[in-house]
Length: 240
Image 1 (tube, rainbow, N blue to C red):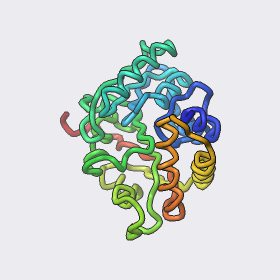
Image 2: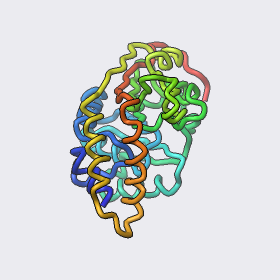
Image 3: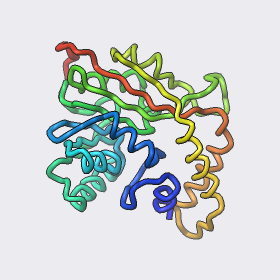
Image 4: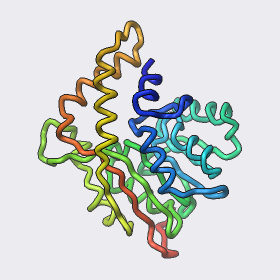
């Protein structure tokens, strides 16, 4: 029930299995910005069940490497890749945002959807993205940032995000952080509709309703952003 609600309200493909709040319009924009093609490698960090990386691979023909701390999620992503007949272009493995286990300069692009705030510490995760990117490779981050970093209603994890400053400090260039108010309105609609549903014994739906109450209580304190940046055109990379 929760999956169906997310797909419908956020406008995701009918078979999309999402573990975040990036909607269909946002996914379309990410695919366009990535501009990947066959033979390129996309690393989907904190990939969850693999939904976004697999969808991008299906659309672009690229190869996807998904990394997540959850072995359960990784196994689910592997099964999903087989169902979608993408197993030959998909590799899912257990790892951390700050320690992916991937080789230096092995990715053409890195995607982090709605999960960078969970990195400990956050600067190490950005440096890891930089390490695994080839020179000139692109990183894309979707997340939320606090309108006021001193707003104590918000999670400290969210209050720490300031990608306009943090991406350059991690060595990235051509940094852009763009507000996405339309994405934010779609999220608001999702949370509001979730609270109108009779959840019954659906544990996932009840969990979503709990999250909806928390998110709507602080909704006015966050902005939705899409951040893009590039690794410098240099042969120097940090050692693995």
